[in-house]
Figure 1 (cartoon, rainbow, N blue to C red):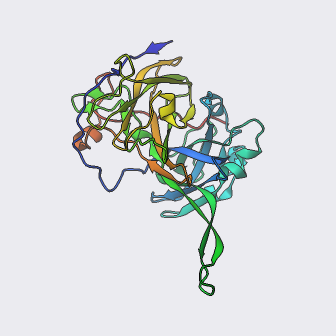
Figure 2 (figure 1 turned 90 degrees about the vertical axis):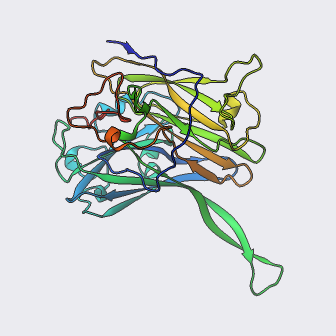
Figure 3 (figure 1 turned 135 degrees about the horizontal axis):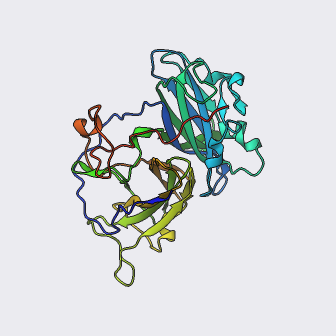
Length: 366
C-alpha cells in the first residue's frame, strides 16, 4: 500500500518568539545519534566519534546499537536481523559484541571509544560515517522475537580530530614547543519522541519542520547539514531545505522565486550535505541566515507508517577545520499539555502535539 502526504508549503511566514530552555528532555529507550564518524576530512583532519551512554533508569540495562551508513543509501536491510548490530550479549546473536553494553548499572555510564573504527570499519564496502540508532532495555530482557522491557538512557557523542599546535618554551624566549591535542564538537542523541513529525500540524503549532540557526557561509566559514530518515524501514521521505534571510524573507533566485532544495531519502537513510549553500546556488550568507528543513511528502509500503526525521548543522572554520555543532529547534514553544497528552489522545493528520506517537522501529527477531 502506498500513502502520500503533502504537508509543507515552500514559502512560509513564521515568528520566533520563545527562548531555548537550558535543559532538554533526552532520556528514552530509542535514541537517534545523528552523526558519528571514522573518516578523514579536509586538510589533515581525521574525524573520530566517542559515544557516551548513561543509564538513567532504576535497574540495570542493556544497550543495542545499529549503524546507518551515510551517502543517502537505503539502510532498511539492517533491521531484518541483528548480524550488523552491536550489543552486549553473545546469547542475543548480535553481530558485534562489547560486554560493556550489558548490565549497565543505574546512573552508570559506558564510553565507547571510536566504535565505528572498532567494529563497522572492518566491514567491506561500508562507509565509515553516518548515524547510530540506540535501543535501551532492562538487562537480559530481550526475547527471541525482539520484544524487550523498555528502559531509559541518555546518549551523547563527541566528534573530534587530532591536532598539533605550539606553545611558548618557558626556558627559551622566542622559541616554541610542539604539542598535540584534539578539537571537535558534541552532539546529543535525539529521543524518538522528539523527531519532526509530518502529522503533528494543528492548533498548537507545526512540528513538521526543524530550524537550524547561524547558517553562515563566507571565505572563513562553511556550513554542513545532516539529515536522518528516522521513519519506519518501509518509508521514504522528501524534504525541502530552504534558506531564510535575517529579515525573515526567503532568499530568491534570479527569477524572484524562493530558493529551495528538495531532497529524497530512502528508508533509514543518512545524508550529510557538505557546504550546503553551494548546493543551493547561493553565494556568501551572513550568520543571521537560518535554514528551514521540513517535510514535502512521504511514501510508504507499510500499512501503518510511522514517519519522522531529525537534522543537525555544523559551522566549520575553513582555516582550522574546527566545527561548531548546531542543534535543530522547533519553531514553537514547549507546551506541557501538548507534549504530554492524556492517555486517550490519538494521532491524526491534525495531531495536536509535537511528537512521533509510536516508535518507528524495533529490534528484529533472532
